[in-house]
Length: 258
Ligand code: IPD
Ligand code: CA
Ligand code: CA
Image (cartoon, helix red, strand yellow):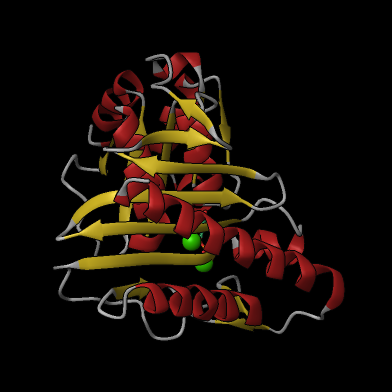
């Protein structure tokens, strides 16, 4: 087995194990829910527990690895040199709490600032997108190829609901041109949909752990992503994120900055 294949299998194993724990918690436990920056910014004991679980697996595998994760005070990493794992233990915590579905476990592996592997697992749908530029992209074991280069008016756009309500970056006009707008509240779900050709674009205000795992995958496929002004994403603070088919990405970029 090549080193990359071994790494992919290893990381998939950690994520499947984490997913089992999360599903058990939904059956058997009362979630402990807290708020962070505001009343809709939720964190549960399972977000923290899952990040700890994955971090332990990472450090047992490579004690020198660096970890950036949304929870447990690990959300900043100044130095991205070497092997860096980026974790969003539960992406879509609001959905996890209120819907018990439409949430993902997500992880990325970066080496010296370059995205090598990405993993986005929609736990309840059991849809797992993973891979990277040197490995290829797979969904539940099946190879995924670049979706058709549909234009903005040929498909659905995923949007952040606050941006849509406030019409940031002319997203309402973008939505008018598209076949429709979807606001799932889960970046991972949107990026799986984009990779699988079920969206033509996705725009949201995201942190590195929201976009890095899916970002590695969509770029490996040949889809486009950047911040909303077209600049490279920095893996640092929250940025307005844009991704899409080449055609829809270009159209959104132009409309957003007009
Ligand atoms: C959130 C989701 C949501 C996006 C937010 C993220 P979380 O992640 O991905 O779709 O609009 O900006 O914070 O907090 O549930 O992991
Ligand atoms: Ca997230
Ligand atoms: Ca999260």
